[in-house]
Image: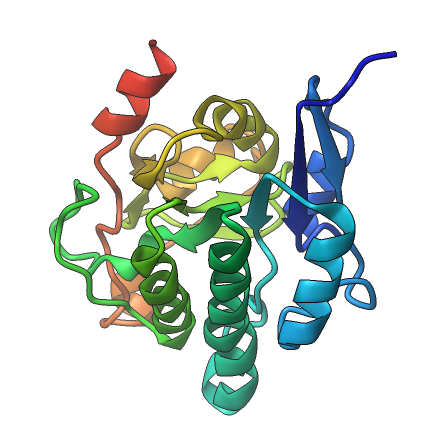
Length: 240
């Protein structure tokens, strides 16, 4: 009988990316996708109880409040509790048991003005959602046995009928993140993860020929036009 060498827990397994991961084989790893009733990230006792039961080696923290984006303005308490306090609870529990922690953050923690952001560049979130993710990062950064992944991923096919033709980003489909995640499971620090730099429209039209052009400058003058990241660190790892 094959003995699994490591155990991985994925929070947020019922989410869009989680559903993709549940169809994925992680070979020598034994994988767990707890429901909220099994693992409540806002309840430290729930986390401790689940960790004691599963005894994980790696915890991949994907559970977060994301859409609708305006909820981070209308219900900041919910955003804070899930994305900041929840992540802090997970970090403390991982620290107590020496569990490797991988945290899914966002490219929108960068200012989005000049583009080509490296992992060491200054941060300035563009909205409350990004602030909440950066709040989570603050806790994870304090724990050295961790990896922060900054990315911008989306469903396939591209769901929206319109896409910005003047916003450059590193959009990547969920399915394309999976092989990258396997490559970086044992890395630590911060890694930008994404696809080739291009406008959102150019990304979308390859998959959805009916998508229409719109322009962020006309709709929201404060919208960041260049949130795209520098992927040199990631590309070097992938080539190894």
